[in-house]
Image 1 (cartoon, protein in one colour):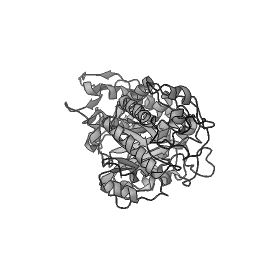
Image 2 (tube, protein in one colour):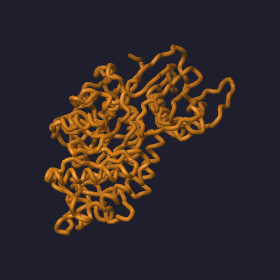
Image 3 (spheres, helix red, strand yellow):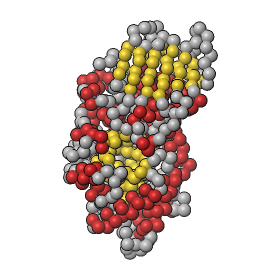
Image 4 (cartoon, protein in one colour):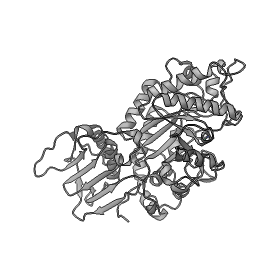
Length: 493
Ligand code: ACM
C-alpha cells in the first residue's frame, strides 16, 4: 500500500524519502516539442489545483536554482490507436526535490502521468504546495476504459462534454462514447442529410434539453479530448432506437409517412426495414459521414433493444451496417444483442444487460470478437444510488459506489477469458437525468470506481483501500465546480 492517495492505484509507487518538490510560481514546465499540448493541459490542471500560473517552455533554463516539471517523450512517439497496445499508455513519474519528470512513449501516457501528478499535489506545512518525492511506474490492466454518454434524451453542450472529458482524463479513462442518435432526437450534423438535425435536433426526451453538434462542434470536442488522451467513439444506434430518423424521412417507413416525434422513455418500438429502397442509402450516408468526421479508429453501430423486429430483418440490417462501417476503415462496435447476428470476427461487443443470455457473446468471441464490459448492475450510472436519489432509474437495482467498485472484468462472461476483454465502459442514459448538475452527480464518485476497475491490477482491488484514496478527490471536484454524491462508506473531506 502506498501512502499516496492515488486513483486508480498505480502498479508501483516508491516514496524516495528526500524532501518534497516545492510547487510555487518559480517552477517552469519544460516540454519536448511533441508534448507541448500536454504541457498546456498540465499548466491548466495545476492552476486549477493550486491557483499558480506556471509558464510552459520548450528548453530548460538550467541554472542552480531552476526547478522544473519536465515532459519527456522518446523521439519517435508514434501512436497506433487501433492496435490497443497498452504500452502506449504506460508512464513513469519521478519527483525529486528539484525536478519532476513525466515520461511516456506517447502524449496519452504523459496525460496519465499528469493525472497522477495532480493527485500528489498537497498543501505544504507553511502554506504553499508540495509534491512528495516518489517514483511511480504504471500501466493499465485493460486498454479500453471509457464512458458512454447519452446526449439524445437530454442534450449536453460542447462545454459540458468537455468537462466530462476532463473528468475522464482525471482518472485515466481514454474513451468517450457519444450516443448521438435515438428515438427522441438526432445530435450530429450529417452533411447532405441536414434534415436530421434541422428536424430531430430540436426534439428531446420529456424534461431534457434539445440541440445538436455541428460538424465543427464535433471536431472541437474531439480535438479537446485528444489533447487529454481521450478518443471519441460516435454511435449511430440502429436498427431499433431509430424514431428520430423515421420522424425525418417517411421513405424509411412502409407507409411512406414520417413517424411522430417521441419524447417518452419507452424503448424497443422503433425500427428500420431492410427491404425499403431508401434504407441502405440512408445507412451509408450516415455511417460514411460519421466515419469521415471521426478521428479515432472506432464507430458504434448500436444494435440494442430492437424488440419489435423480426430476427431476420434485424440480422440483415446489423450485417449491412457492419459492412458499411468496415468499408470506412473503422473498427465497428455494437451492443451485445448483435453477437447473435453472425457478423464477421474482430467485432467488439458491448455487454450491458445481465438479464440476457451470454452464450451468443461467448460464441462470437470464440470466432474472433472481443468484449467491452458495461454491466448495468455495476457501471450504469443512470441507476440510482439509493431510494433517495433524485435522478435516474432503478431497473438494474440501486448501484452505490461500492457496487461500481466490487466486480472483476476478467470473469463477467463465462467462456470469455480476460485476454478477450478490451475493457470497461460505464454508461449514463439521460431519460431521467436533466441538466449538468444532475449529470455529474450521477457520475461522481462512481466514475472513479469504474476507472480503477479498468486500470488497476486485480490484486489491488480492495474496497477499504479505494474508499480511503477516493475521499480527498472531493476537493478536486469542488475545485472543478462539479456536483457529486456523498456515497456512504467514505470519509469525505
Ligand atoms: C442499452 O442500455 N440499451 C444499451
